[in-house]
Length: 176
Image (cartoon, rainbow, N blue to C red):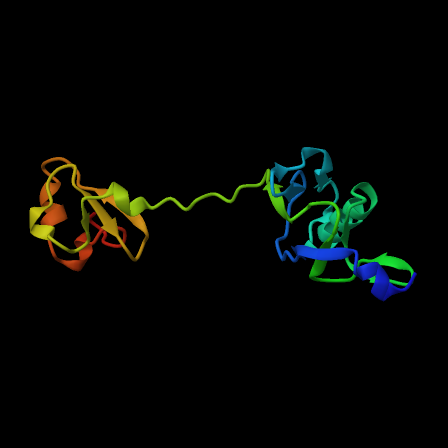
């Protein structure tokens, strides 16, 4: 059977084209859908258990191989005289025309979640030196150069907070 004839039985349902690096413990699952919904029996997953699998080209290749082996109605890669060949980078995902499969979706279950940066600025009353005359005991002052929040001390030190001399600047002044 020629390559041209073989390809007439297949239609492109998407691309396996991810540049996302994963971490050990992450799982990528391919879901396949018809017009009626997902065919859960065709789900294919790859779990990242080695450092060598973390790069996008590595886990994509493993997922593509798993799809080609375990889902006979779907193939990833290009059809050649030797069969379906998985290359490097973006790969077409093909479904057999009689399968009814219309598209696929990747789901990522990631163990490593980047920490959201804490916006410390929500924890202050003023940005130094704005409204310095209104600083009172307990007033929280954000000091941009040091990236820290300072609190005005109780009386008799409260007046230091309101003083505009450089030695009273929070974070750098000798008397703050």
